[in-house]
Length: 261
Image (cartoon, one colour):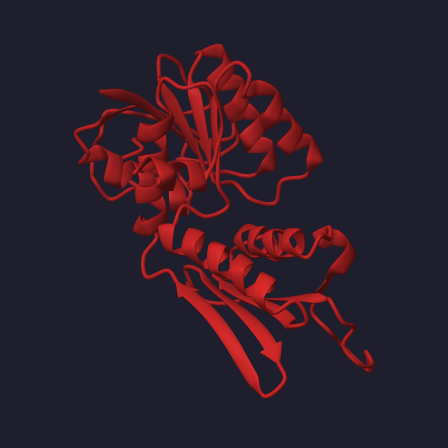
């Protein structure tokens, strides 16, 4: 049985992971962590997850676990990394909004522990990303726009998933995404520059996650679209990643998980 810790345990995704792991025979929930000033410190992690008393209290730290799943924020991820190192455990993270410091740290520790990072744990999104790569290759002159929608409380934009799709398209075009992307448009922007990738972020209500990739061509438009129906989609994917990375060392992503199936 895999001894599991969940960082960001009181958040939307943390609660979903705990709820699914509680009924999954592969896992034993050993720890649930949050930042030190969080109001749910000291409460049972099963209560916000909707499963009742689990016997595991939300704490600032954790020990004696095999894998930690992190859905927190960039600074919370750094805390989860240190907990993983201290316990010689693997880390699975879906935290977005990371900068070069956070990415470099993940790469650095992957020489000592298992690291699994994904901006989206959906197999469907992995397929959309691969299809987008193929379309970018087939239509090198297409005008590409990426539209994403999430709930009103999401704090980063564009979404990590949208950026991952954009980076893959830019790679096919032999470019760096930062050099060819634009986020939103306003005013008299003039004609659309060739080769540009546009990003547009919608925030509202309780939208779980929607991504649309538009390829604008002369006389036709090709659109790929993915909609998440439940947060359990991402929680289930994170648990699959945890089972996959248990006992491994190195850096892994969704492509590695899919190829192992």
